[in-house]
Image (cartoon, rainbow, N blue to C red; front, side, top):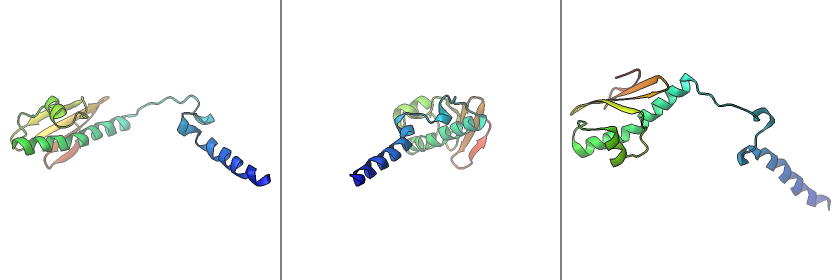
Length: 121
C-alpha cells in the first residue's frame, strides 16, 4: 500500500510545477502587467526587417531588379507575414532600402549588402 502512494505523490509534485503551462499564475505573477520598452520596440523593428529580406531577394530573383517592389506586392506574392509597418523607401535596379518603425523606434536595411542600421534610410 505504501508504494502505491509514491507515484501519486510524485505526480502531484510534478503537476503543481506545470500550473503555469496550463494558464495558472504563480503567487508572484498574479496581476502582472506587460509593458514594452524602447529596446523591445527596436527588437520588433529589427525582426520585421529580417523577416522581409527573403521576400525582397525573391522579388529580385524573379524580376532582375528591385524596382517596382512594394510592400503589398511582397505580401501577396511572397510572404503574407511581412509586417504592415514595413516601408520601402528606395528600390532601384541594383539596391534598396527598407525601414520599420515600431513605437518611434526606427531601423533600416540597405541592401543587398550594407545591412541593418538604426534610424531611417
